[in-house]
Image 1 (cartoon, rainbow, N blue to C red):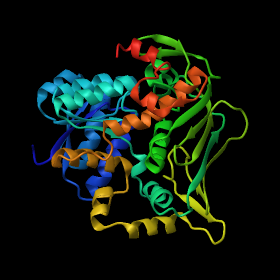
Image 2: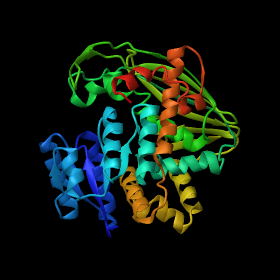
Image 3: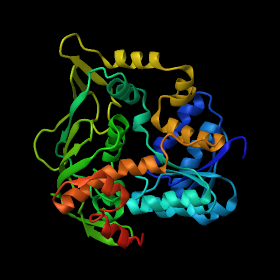
Length: 400
């Protein structure tokens, strides 16, 4: 093992910019445990752009590759940070694992449960680390409010959670970053799977694994999407509205409602009701508490985000601070990349491995499977792969 973990950025489009910015943040705080040595993308222009940005951070310019085979053969990197569209996660991830790379892949870990399981199996067979890139749970405010709710029990026992985000904002059918997100074969589902994966990870982080899920989803926007990879054109077919109930075995009932297709003024809130009060999310409610929160007690004065964060920080040991916020970093992307590379260096398990990513994904899939079947489903049946009706056409198309 080299002194520094040598990392390749695989996929140099939109989300990779957040990874580069996270790297810049933790690098500027003194981290020298890893470096980017390669950038790979079918668009050489995109790979060159990211390479130049990274060179501006670390001083050395990563090599540029247009194809994965050349990257693997080069020997320039031992680990890959995958920032690609969902349908490529499993195929590129498995090819890299089989090529001797440790892999961190942006959520969702695979386009289906079956794809995720194949990635996990490939990692085990290769003896390599498979990590899930999940930034939201790693922000200071997110960790603080998770602690306040689940560990400190600041508002007592959680009785119910109500997440509501409704407005009117159709996707731009001409945007390359949006058009593939409108077709199930490429994204694995709509916003339940995309931004919703952050939410499902956070509620698993707060409350553990759920018992049963009931969901009704709708597709109002069925415009034809042109210029798609492989198929050329297809009608939009992902959900753009849903109502879900998630029931825990020994915990709260979570109500989760969303739409981007309902005309009129938008409304959004995230409310966590406890036996002693309520915590309201102050930011985008799918990115739980990334924007902070407000605590209101039934019998005394409430607390601000700053007060909750200060209480949380005071509860941490120095070792915990170093592990959760390395080098004092507060950027979720910077922390996730560090965690991946540090796991490689030390041989420990990453904070979110492939299994953890699949569990968050399974809760998204449970919503899809429930709506497809028209009845509630057991979370464990979806996680195991026993129920996979919604995912069947995706698995068949990609030959998973």
